[in-house]
Amino acid sequence: MRIGILTSGGDAPGLNAVIRGAVLKGDKMYNQEFVGFRSGWRGVIEEELLPLGRHEVRGISKQGGTILGTSRTNPFEGNGGPDRIREVLERNDIESIIAIGGEGTLAAARRLSDAGLPIVGVPKTIDNDISATDYTFGFDTAVQIATDAMDRLRTTGDAHGRCMIAEVMGRHVGWIALHSGMAAGAHAILIPEQKTSMDQIIEWVTSASDRGRAPLVVVSEGFLLDTMDDTHHERGLDAFGRPRLGGIGEMLAPMIEERTGIETRATTLGHIQRGGTPTSYDRVLATRLGMSVLELARTKQWGKMVALRGTDIITVPFEDALGQLKTVPQHRYDEARVLFG
Ligand code: F6P
Image 1 (cartoon, helix red, strand yellow):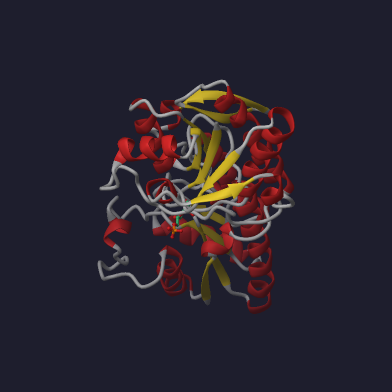
Image 2: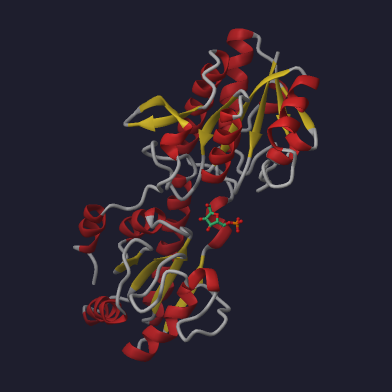
């Protein structure tokens, strides 16, 4: 019987290394056959299968994206759900599915496995916000890209004596901002977990500028000023309650400029953070997760996923990863905050 692999949700650098780890180990040690589903759950529902053997995974760990393609298709939203998936698996001689995905994917995987389907999982997100795993692959790459970008923003900021704002990804959590901001020596790090006043931001910016530094501010896309309510981003409004054109970085720039008199520019890094070559850390983590999830599938541990705990790959039930996002704890923010201004 074959094992099917799918990648679902937003891509993350390292997806291909997971696929390669599982396929190579399966092929070498167990003569296991695999098949890929094109574009996540959509490929299962629409029965779009791709060949997936040693040949297909050769040299792909260093490639960003995913050779299988991805989508945000939810198998429960008008797509036939468990019955349709069971039918596709049986018809194609597929014993189980390895689902590589974020919260949404894992939630769907859990519901499917509760319905009796043979599913195991690998957690994935550049945001690093999945509970039950210390780090997700893709995060290190995103942080590296954001840090490189900030190092560049610094030199142009210094040249002009400008305040530079870097908006990074992170809808609900500030891990990318925290790590890249610390690495780049930002003068303020603004994250969704910590609503902050404009007065405080101005104080940090002014303090850096008074010491002759061109202020560097890093902000997560989901950050809120203390005057903004929690539904602000969903409503897509700017600080004045008008439909927002840019992100939070674009919104803060004129406010900082007006209050400090320092010319301010905002850069949104966007999907650049998800593209290109994964770091070696992410390749190693992803490869190990791929090799481990293969063992889960072979030993029929349905309803479980692999995770990183310390330096070990462990096994946890899907439900441990769901329900609550892994946010930046207060002590981690306080630790970074000492360096602001
Ligand atoms: O969850 C990963 C992530 O990259 C977030 O940081 C970001 O908010 C979102 O996906 C972007 O999604 P999309 O690629 O659908 O625009």
